[in-house]
Image 1: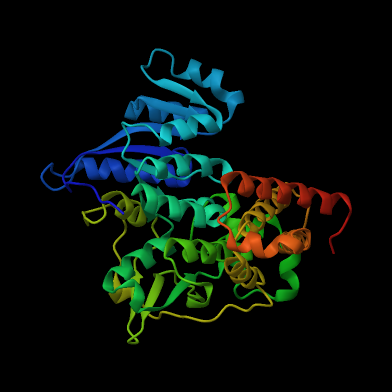
Image 2 (image 1 turned 180 degrees about the horizontal axis):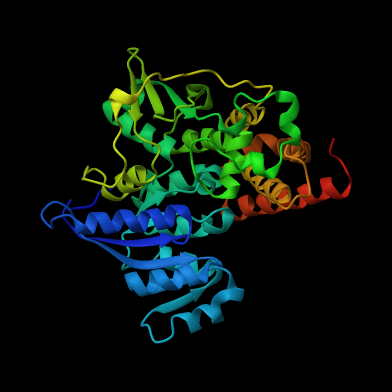
Length: 413
């Protein structure tokens, strides 16, 4: 995969999902990098932005950063957005097609993908096929289409750099050795709000309890995923493709202090860990400036204040999602698209107050089992074949329908 020809060359950025927590943090990171002396850092130009329905914030960002292009993925908000930015010289694009057009722009060399859900998948593929650097913040592209995206990245010379804190940590730790020397990848997790909770009460936890993460401040969907540990299951699948390792070489370890963001164990027994304060600005900046390391705004780790670093294996009875993640990573094919979509639909139902917290993983398990039965005669082919984008999106849509069928038929405990 290619790198920037010159480390000092100015960078032209498109941020997909600029109104979310990752997008707004990325803009602050860019501000900080642009404040550095010109001989210390390349300049970062924001060429394109995208948002969904938070059009007031998106309009503020357009006024501040003056991008040439902006996409509003919620087509119902487009006309109102046009009124908000009236008089500004910016091309407004609409819907998922707008995201894809932005990702493929010749004026853009780096795409930060931070769109939640399957909506950003086509855009990521468009950027890959243009040979760009893609800083991937959302899990879905590599979870749903990891085999397809990594194959296309090799074909077109694109760079895939992780922004997710755990995968960024692994990427950084991997610089210490060669791929064939890796014995194990160790993903860490804080354990979420229920690490020490009475297992009997977890299935009936309230929305407020679920969203009370002890360490990270994130959007509601990913916070729910942290509580079920579905986020770690998705990260297992993501790591399998991003780092080209089999599921058998991936391990999950609970680390409540959230200081060690992940680790790599090499065949000689050395374990390389990336440590830092729980601050997303650091992995965002590293993805934008790699292979440079530049002064940044991330909170510095004060080692003298660290009392202990705790590691423990997750309880599979409390967090069954993790084992499902390993299962799906081993199966490959379209199974991950079903797994991800079923979780996405189930979390939406939980946040709407229609199902219990414990029903989320139950629904995902039912969908996955039903899909395996559905694919029975063709499962071997589905596992061994590099599924097309159309097949992956079809599996995604099937899983979302299947969740609603399960609810309609009252198939939950």
